[in-house]
Amino acid sequence: MNSAMETIEKPNRRKAAQARPKQPAVSLESLVYEVLDGEPLYYRGYKDVLAGKKTAEEIMGSSTLLWVLASYFMHIMFSGLDRKKYWFASNEACVHINHRNNLAHDVAIYEKTVLTPDKINTKYTDVPAKVAVGIDVKADLSNPIYYNYVNRKTRKLLDFGSEKVIWVFTSTQQVMVAERNADAWLTMDWNRDLELTDGQFFNIGQYLADEGITVEPS
Image 1 (cartoon, rainbow, N blue to C red):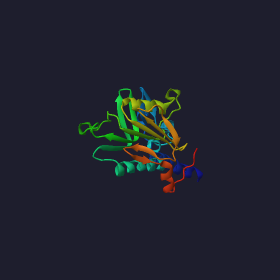
Image 2: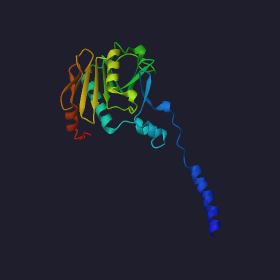
Image 3: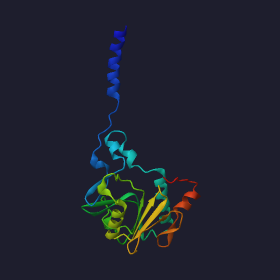
Image 4: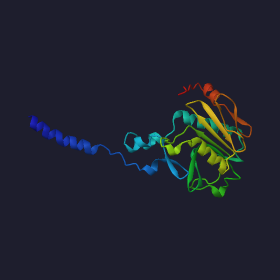
């Protein structure tokens, strides 16, 4: 009896194994988030994807807090800024600075006199944003060559022509504002009014409180 059962079970196990879908292979190149000074930066968590512990979508997707904050900035842009004057970008809008630098913005404001219709195509933009906004760091920075990533990226964008670069750090509940013509870059608590551009202000701490969202510092 046992022998007969084993004969039946073994083919069934083989069939189940064959029916189980295989995880598609993920190339390392597909997990590149940015290229900074010729060095590829991969999405945080890319090693787990290569090891089969996570999917690429899990590490590339935005958290609820990130997309809520991105939507907040977009609301300010669409409701308070001149849409005839500006383009408003989101969803990791990428900028090609040169062959050694491809960087991403979470939110950005482009002047239409700079990003003209002839530059709208299927490629990364190659002109600077007036204002670039980053919300947390999505790149894996475990390699020492990526030391000081935030400052390096900020300086690269300002030198390229952006007037202002804003960083939002949810873990410390801080905002960094770097302006091209300023003597210093300011990092401050996010519970204050800060200018986005053209007299339009944002206050992340107040916005989250108004929406009933609590973020614990880590």
